[in-house]
Length: 189
Image 1 (cartoon, one colour):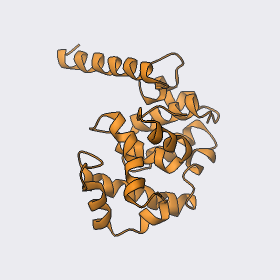
Image 2 (spheres, one colour):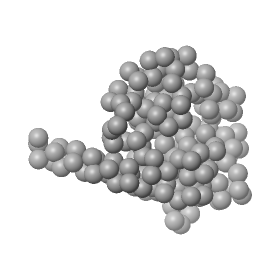
Image 3 (cartoon, helix red, strand yellow):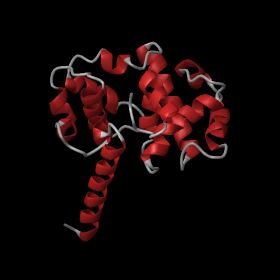
């Protein structure tokens, strides 16, 4: 089981549902990562116990924004992220026939996987590399060249990102690393 939200029910959903995992990744910016990765569980509850790419893609955008904005909001910027999640679901439906895991299962190489991820809303270069590393390290998705496509996030024994979070202790180590990087950037080092 994954351990990104540090909430057993939410982590089980992330482990079982590739769309939930992708939604968590879209939301993993400008909020604590536990909140980003617990939000898919909350979204599922708000949508009547199911998250489905076709349903979300077809929703009225204002209704989806209202679901995201209901207290407690699913993200610090609920309307913008509702839009990103809806666009993600449209891509899953239009390009992957409603099967989100095909994004990585059908990748022919690390570069292909990276390209597919980077094309998703909310995925810049770094997030795409992190997710390539996550897929390789935690889900065993290792197309040829995945380590190169992941860059430093594919290296074993590191604590750089979500790719390295396997329990509460590794979360603490990743947080410490990020704080160190932030402090170095502030000091100009």
